[in-house]
Amino acid sequence: MRHTIGIIDSGVGGLTVVRSLVARGAPFDVVYVGDNANMPYGNRPAGEIVTLSLRMLKLLSEYHVEAVAIACNTISATVDQLRTRCSVPLVDIITPAAAALARRGELDVGLFATEFTVKSGLHAKRVRELNPAVTVHGVASPRLAALIDRAIDDEAAIRDEIAAMLERLTAMHPVKTVLLGCTHYPIVMNIFTSLAPGIEFIDPADLQADAVLRLFSSWGGGKCDAESASAPSLDLVTSGNPESYRPIMARLEIPEARSIRRLEA
Image (cartoon, rainbow, N blue to C red; front, side):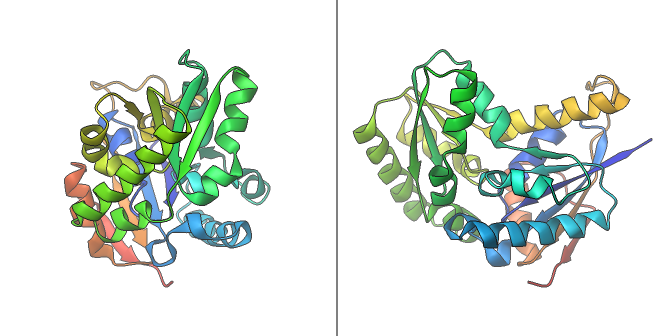
């Protein structure tokens, strides 16, 4: 039996999770909902984030998805409120990322994310629950996710914003590892690594993809491997411009979506 899961994000960032699932030969189909018309979520109050997220979850229920991966860190910071109002399992992106930070053996780690995600303190809370000795130093950007979503070709602006974040982090505390706590950020991983070659930047999409596959295995899906697993089909729904997804998918080397439709904002 072929399973279907949903992925929600404020925009194109969650395509990094799709890339990770495709790379792992995930044996289920994916319905992706991106609320580009209302991004960035990270500058919104919690109540608006929950309302917009519930709208996406309601849409996914029409596709009869069996679980939803919340590919947006900002939405994941409200996951406790969403779980009580959702009938399928939700796989947030913060929990597996926090577990990875807690077991690295470093006492100080960095976090780059939206203002809402950093202010929520959820990464730091989850890390402390697993390893109280670790301190998470968060640096927020109100601009970077929107730049990547809407102005991916403006590399100068993106580089300037990342450079400013690195400068603020260095002033706060030097670290060897930084979690990219927004799925938009790994889309421009090459810029992060070029500006700070001495820092290891963690892509949370890979960690979430592994968490989704563990959930699939718990359904009796068995072990996923390159020989037995087929690539997932992908259906895209967006409140923004559907064509904005094509260059990002090409950049991430994601196969063409089976369908792309427009959702009224």
